[in-house]
Image 1: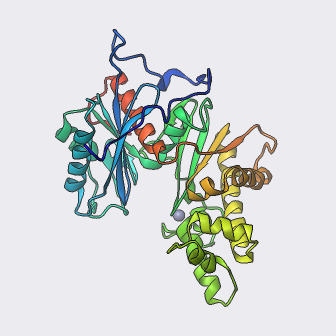
Image 2 (image 1 turned 135 degrees about the vertical axis):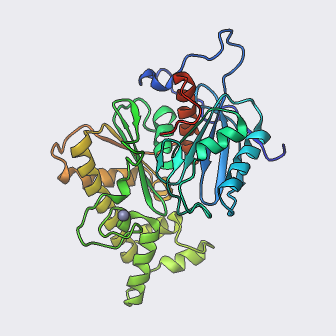
Length: 357
Ligand SMILES: [Zn+2]
């Protein structure tokens, strides 16, 4: 198993005592004797890679590996997940899977980023059948928030919104100490809150969504339009200096530091959109923590989180509410840890092996 990376302590929580969140995700040890560590598997299915990890009771990732996401449809993806689990070994008791699309009762409804997923796929059933293990399926963004909530930046809070600003803008919720997926698994789509009627065109085909201003694809589209209109920017010069072939979060950061006017204006617009969305979400849900992840959040850090909170305040009915906006801590591990947490909840509930979120 040469591709398996072992690291026992990466995610083990070191802050003493901070575990004051509810017991929903803090299961009793599965073995009475205590010598055998109970392990579950977390799987994060992305458009490019599938990450698979073994996770212990303290949310530590014991071993993990990544494989390329097959492009020839659901059966190949199930085989890739099963093979990766086999390679890792470790006898997981259950499997949690995060997939890039809306999930309802173990069925991935649609997944534009997965080739060959042209109709709903009962991914939980298929993986359960192939592995003989209980499997729970959820939306990747939702499970990433669960990961940050049990072991990352949102630890200890009860009303959490996660915002993932990457190519698009995803999101997820924990409400009153329980992951919240909605009536049919579609909750948490922060990126498609409409903040400007008739505004910029969004990847979803509608106008004025948060994602239409704050998603990387939308930002790149906006740059292309501005450049075509003859406005100057150093963005592409910086991209070349950095040896990148697209406008990465690092390129945006350098352009902001260089006070590039176009980059500054577009990121200001993105922060404004995120802030209006956040203010609106807070009025509806009365949150106590917002965790922001994705490339730009990782590069700009707390500075970005603070700017988004400042942009949200004018839209909040209780502008001085004690709302924390923090940057995600777990990086790529958030999805694995969140999926594993749901898997552990599944075996605790003794639910049937195919049930999903
Ligand atoms: Zn949209």
